[in-house]
Length: 309
Image (cartoon, rainbow, N blue to C red):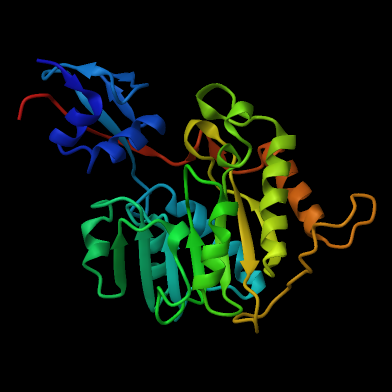
């Protein structure tokens, strides 16, 4: 009897959950009888060979998304930003990719928040430095919900505009905290502007999405410190950006911190932020990231299991 591909991947132990299976399919890492799978809902038979492509050089992060934060933090060292010894908040934690990076870079404590349940990988859930809060919408966070207040916030949120969450994140964090957040244009520009498979391909829409988030952050008193294109695209090749903000208040870290006024007239530039945005969009357009089709260029190995167990 046939079953859904995502269900069968979980049954055979090739995926932790159906959501994880769907991500593997979206990343092009699943093969059915040596043919790349395209839909997690595809029907597969019990005797069909399923394969999941794995990176032999992968450092073993809890998720692919971890590489996005790892590369961003390496770059943000120039701004004095490091997780070492800090109280951190990870919103949209999912399986724990960002939490994993924070711990490996010396974070003292991480509160991992996600609206879902049972996604965090066991080794991170069991880590004494990690506090997992499931079934929590980041938009509902308020001052005092995380005590002591985090001085570093990281976020990888989907299916919601970052502008709807920024207020809550700035409320819950410590004064002067650093925020490293992914901006995903596909969740900022509106459904009517999405292309096939929900992909945003127009660089002007990328620019507008990032500029709108920066303007909202500035209106809430935050400082825009840097804007970069993500080291990896999202599923289906969506371009993403990484935003470094400083919350209002005395700074926790030192380093370059340009003014965050992005609301001035286009003809009277008052801030370097528009230039940061343009540079990030140009980098995305030129494909200057060292990735191919959403995966780092590494040697890969294949894990496979035949149907019957």
